[in-house]
Length: 271
Image (cartoon, rainbow, N blue to C red; front, top):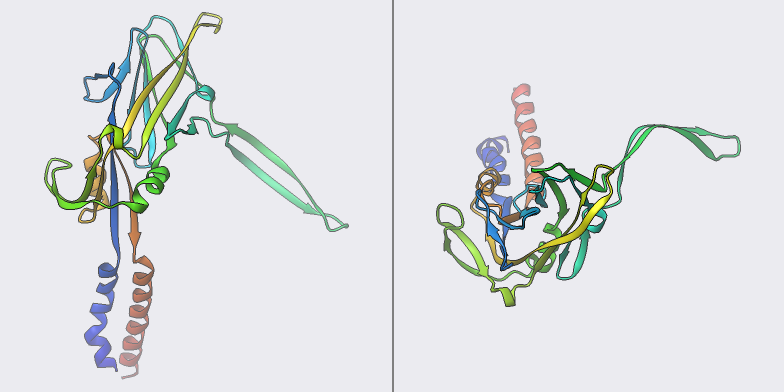
């Protein structure tokens, strides 16, 4: 038996790499606002004499990255409680209402079997507003849309297998393209802003919105996560999520290999 283990042990350790695989699902978003313009960095934005807004979908977390520029000579306040994204009419707020607790909690028992305790520290909530000074900008990361992409498109995705230059070179991908009127996902962003005076009172309050639709969806397997992340750095119109399969089988095979290695070493020691 030891001879068989020596012969096939390297193969056992190699099998986990053969069983496990990662599939990347990449979504492409197209702006459909007639009044949109292309910024110097190539990103599509909505702008007027007061404000400029652009969105990027290529964050590793799946959150939408928003850049808000103040072109005026007056301070600007972004009200996040009145700012939101909608996907097919479903609203995703920029403020989730969650807070972070920093500190410690001591619990004590009592003679009656109950418990009581004390807390020391602070509870930190996320900001409800963003302040933008004159002639400056602010950037933020909000609303993770990838679970919605996976639910609406990824779980029932059927495309065509081909080589397509999604990045700067052709890749083997399963893909589908959508027209505006037939896209399964519409994304609308509403940014509420106010210009404020020296006493922080609003002078004017308006809402600017930017609209996108899912224009393409790609399923890619022959690409590592590091390579994908590098490619996404310059593609703000693309978002992605990845699904790995076979890791459970791989771990089991590694354990089998370790046990087999232990048997071989044990028998060699006995000799």
